[in-house]
Image (cartoon, rainbow, N blue to C red; front, top):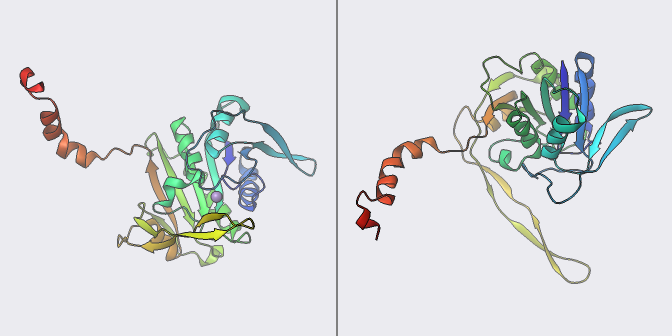
Amino acid sequence: MRILLTNDDGIDAPGLAALADAVRPHADVLIVAPATEQSAVGHAITIHDPLKVSERYHGSELFGYAVHGTPADCVKLALCSLMSQHPDLIISGINNGANLGTDIIYSGTVSAATEGTLLGIPSFAISINSFDRRAHFETAARAARHLLTLVPHPHMPAGTLLNVNVPDLPWDQLKGWKLTVQGRTKYVENYERRTDPRGNAYYWIAGTLVETDENPDADYRAVKNGFVSLTPLHFDVTNYDYFAAARTRLETSLNPPDEAARG
Ligand code: MN
C-alpha cells in the first residue's frame, strides 16, 4: 500500500510525525507537507508564485518534502510531479485542533483530503480535539492506523472523503466510533482592536464558539462525548432541495414563453 501524508500545520508539526510513525510499518509512505503552518487557508492554491520544494531530513533519514505552498498545492504537486505512481490513500493530519461543523470550510487539513478525492484518490483528514502540542497524538495515530484497511472502502462513492476527529484522550478512555454529520456550529465573531508600538490600530480575530445544533448525529457532539467522529464529506455544494423546489418557478419567470414579453 502506498500512502501520501500531508497536513496544514506544516512539515515540522508533531501530529504529522506521530501519523508517520504509526503508518510507516504498514505502508510505503511519502510525506509532502507545507514548509510553514497553513492552518485555515482552506482550499487555496498558489498560482502567482513558484512552488519551492526542499527535502527535510530527520537525522540522516529523509522525512519528506517541504513545499512553500498550501495543503492543496502539496497534494496536487505530489500527484502530478513528485510521485512516480499514484498513492492508494492520502491522509491529512493529524491536525492540532478539531475540524468540526463550519470549521471544515476554512480547514487546510480537510481541503488537502478534498483535493485528494477530486484527483480520484481515497482520502481522509484526521484532527485531534486539542490545540496543545502535547495532545494525545498517539491516540489519533492509532485511529488512523485502524482506518488504513477501511479507507478505501468499496462502498464509498467517488469524490467522498472522511473527516475524522479524535477526542484528546488516552486510547483506552475512548467510548468508541461514531458515523456523524457536519454539525451546524456558529461563532460569535469578535475582532479585538489593539495598538502597535507606533500607535497604529490592528485587529485580531477572537470569536467564541456557540453550539446551536441539537442534532444527536452532529460531529462535535460525538467528540465531546468521547467518540471518534467519522463524517463522510463531498464537495458538491449544490442545494438540491432548493434546486428541485425552485427550478420550474424561476425558469418560468426568467424565460417568458412569449418572445415579445422579453421586451
Ligand atoms: Mn492546522
